[in-house]
Image 1 (tube, chains in turn orange, blue):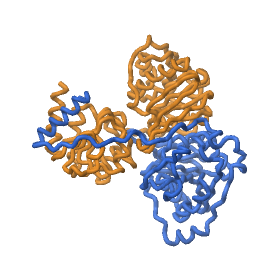
Image 2 (cartoon, helix red, strand yellow):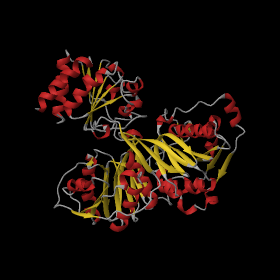
Image 3 (cartoon, helix red, strand yellow):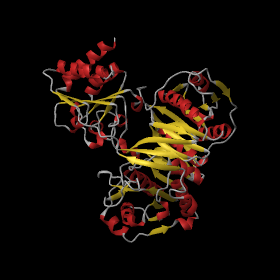
Image 4 (spheres, one colour):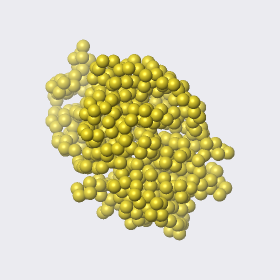
Length: 324
Length: 262
């Protein structure tokens, strides 16, 4: 492995923060390996995203505005990334550890006969050898793994694990022709149900509510304002999702999402192991709970014992004021 | 129609996970082994599909695992699968994603299928990359995170969950499908099912039969595991009992400002 290829996941001209984190990290790895860093942007809106991408320190941005990327499930992206990998030469591919990023990475493992490290939070490289650190089992264990020297390697990158720093002298944008091909899977309908809320896994601050919320209302009229004050997102424990107070898409824990924001505030959450495995890798954990013997107090950095319904609105006011 | 479901056997998710310091692998002995919970949803989807399609449809379970764990597969047969095939070989130990998916694909080619249903995740530290690699090695389309499957005349229409909603996607058999948890709660084995499972066949396959001896285990892998260890433990922090809510909020703000989080 010598070069680094960054897959820029985008939809209709919008991309996520993890893109810029990967672009920044790609430069460091490419320099350590003595190779080039190349970004690949695909589909409708790719040119628009490429304009943002070129402000980061990569050498080139490959753009293919092929509408097939948005009408056929994943296969066009697999083809284009394989083509990019073959044209760039031996390389490490950085792919975001998102729902579709994980699917894509698996496909490329076979296509490129590549080793893979998943959900990576640290990378070091030297002499064609790449070493990756990944938390496993919700952060209960940490693995150090080497992608053996070979033509290709793949790392799926955990959002929020690396810093994004713009820079570089403006990468060259290389527009490439769409290839004509037939693909096996057709997307007949693509329905957006989300309300445009920030993805939980990407939020810098997560305010999570549990059984102690007692209903759906506190999530919208108490936790949401606090999340907004921080510029973060609202999450929930399994108890709250099972009770139907919030959608399962907000559930954090063993059977839900794993998050590791710099700041996690648990409100009325006891902190049972099922929840803990989904958030223990967070930077700083603050708990607000009426029970000082709740398990969460055993691993939170700060536990404030008291009535969340009185404390949270006060905290929202203070944070809003402090941010002004 | 021949429906095949892959299942993985994992240490009981409700038990404590331990790592063998010598091999750096998850300890799989001395703890109860169960079918990966996510794979039970894949099996449920397969059984529902068989019930809907009827005719001479069959559900076969495929599992790559040490043969000492063979009996843990009986639950799948008790739930309603018609038979099982186990790829079992000490040479497979330490296989990474590439080597595992490659070996599994050779076995699955031998078994044959119209639709291959795979659980969405595994409970023992997965990468989520095996289904995609498997589909590539098998040369079939890969539809992930599926919550609803309709099949008619070899044409497949599914609903799959995405980050912010869902998609309707069409394709043709044969294909690989991975299931979302919304596909339906796995059924409990009936008493009749449990009794019947004892007589159902579990066929064994070895690496030699697949001709995969050079591409399995640690040496056949593209990655090398250096270490597998718990992170530094997170000690208890401060516990504060404020006089009133305002003091509680102020304590939190001061703490966050000190850490430069506000």
